Length: 219
Image (cartoon, rainbow, N blue to C red; front, side, top):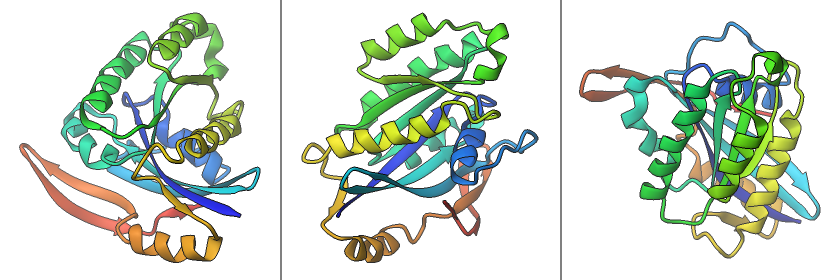
């Protein structure tokens, strides 16, 4: 069975539910009072599709403006990006366009883009229509999906689409890792991701310092 290992970066405005979304899928849990991400958190997860095992190495980035300068550290060499917004916030949707420009200007390799409208459980407070978000996603050649991290609606489909997207990138991206068997992939993964932990990064004005690391999360 072929094994693909791809880097996925989560981008979006503060409070849109980036961490809640990946935690819902990886940990099968919802944490409504979770503190904002500082720096970035790392998760890893395997998805089995057809005759492939796809390992998603997921970097969940901080959404606060003061951490914006750190983002290139995490989306460099990414094979896919989840661009997440809150369907009840027009501002969070508009910020997605800025992240797309960032990616186009800094990522040279082919990559999969997936725009995700979160908080579908608050549909009665929607500010961004499905039609508007879908049309924008089509204009940037991205997949568009909606979900609710709180209720788990649509969450699994997002990660299945990520896996499918990485499978289609075979031969198009030099940074996508492809192995012919799972044993070789496992040994190479450990070597390639020895820094892949949840990072708590201490940030002062104009500088970035290394923070403490704890074990990464895996489903």
